Length: 199
Image 1 (cartoon, rainbow, N blue to C red):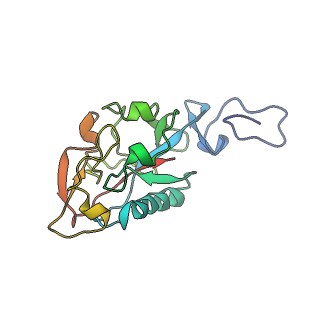
Image 2: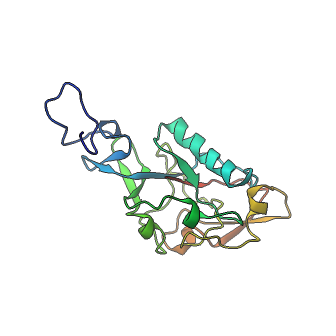
């Protein structure tokens, strides 16, 4: 095996450098010329109102964006409600969460799940599944910095209702402190993006 690198059948030895993510194994990315095991994270390129059909529907929304962009793996939405939240839904990675930033570039969001949930993140969470920067978003979340549900009243009816009389808690993509994930309250009839994480 070639560890984090994609094996080349006609090569005598495994690669030792990369120039694109395609040079790396499916669960790795090219980071500064070397393949490293990572988990992908992104904010969706499209928006949706608060009715995702529950957490499963929101996960499917994330998965479709990842699949369309050619990102490997299984994805879940950074959402919380009365049925669950990242703290009990996510596979808590010990490798970096990175955002796409081109065929051979990534932006590190956090070095692990523990780092992700310590109250701060390393970069603005503004890259889509295609690596395009879409700043100043307030994605639906209802999740505290620690990864648990924020408030039972701010989840658009467990993410199944988009009525104008309901509210959803959201974060802000331009924040590096706890407000990246919580701090705004928005109407469920308004469309917003989601944060998505590879499992």
